[in-house]
Length: 538
Image 1 (cartoon, one colour):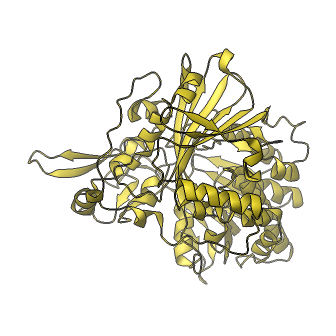
Image 2: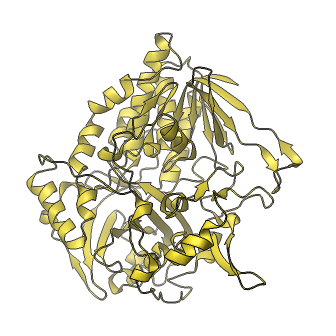
Image 3: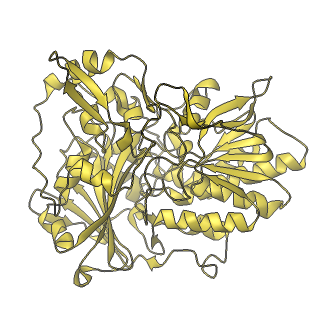
């Protein structure tokens, strides 16, 4: 199938690019591929949204019914010890923590709404189709993508309901797959897009949606915490956002540069909810949904080259998230708009399959570049530990207002930060109580995750001997702890030998294994389209 523009990924970046292209030239043919069973199915974010980019894209979004319903009413930043909570005075908070004028949202619902706006403009959207393979022209430029085959059996042979994937060709292809995109990773390697850039830095965000006692509900309340339960060397913290309808979003983010292989981000999140200051919100409430997703958090220093012959990276596939503000959706929308303007200009000049040089040039002149420049030192400072990191972030953001005459750098990829288990004591986490804290499998159940049972496993190993021979022997099998969905499990064979069991059916597509595996032996590839989680209101 031939199009002017092929977009891989139906999140905020991909849909905003599609909308902007159609606004600028309605005659341009645009298709959006979305691997989730519906738009929004795989979208997971905190989320407090800065409406700036959305207002640029669709100025009358309020009249059109965009689901930005709950304006932020209060910012609260807490430092937690095991039993106490200390509120940071608002006059001491850097500007990046101010949420006046922002909205507490379900990004999944915003994406569903963006999809309606895109379809109204004539964009073709194919949910349930994965961008499984990049296609190239004879000169090496990107030609488009092929979708994955459907109905393939575990042994790789076609099943009774086999359906061949299709090729989608575009004059330009935009990749908007989100953090650690499967095809984005391949493009970075093929075109050496990370040359001269810092290693990318990631976090894992784990989230639950609760319905709480109306007496405890405060629409627009935004709470962030640092400190307990993490140790002072490990970067991380929580968010707790009050939406409408007595709903609260609660989550925990842990930087994937952590050192201790015994650490479990999932268990730290469960433990966090038991803090006296936090648990009161949830007592008498009901957990509705659960999910997890990696976050691209390296900032300006880690942004790859954005363009290559025939296409571009947008949104979190490139890494535009502003870690200091804990916000990425406005950045994704803006990057999609900038790429769209470049595409329309190129098509108007009769060009195809070349480099969209005006896209990175426009980014460098944009407010998004300025915003990321101001935030560039926050994550590197926070790597120095809680106390030094907090102090220096305050100096960087309050004294220098993000304009310090130096730029700190990320030196080590996250997977290389893990240290041998022999240097640490195992962590004993409390057992879940089933009311406030839960095990992984009951959590995965309410993420509505499902994959066709007999399909090939999409969590592939370069070398089958590595999980036991290196990861278990040296690092005490960290994949059994960093995965928030219980996918990786070390079990004994009948002969008493250890082996890694991969429960691919549980995978919520968070990509943490692809990022944190210390040997980089696990490679996440796209499963059959429509599989994975199906998040409501997340």
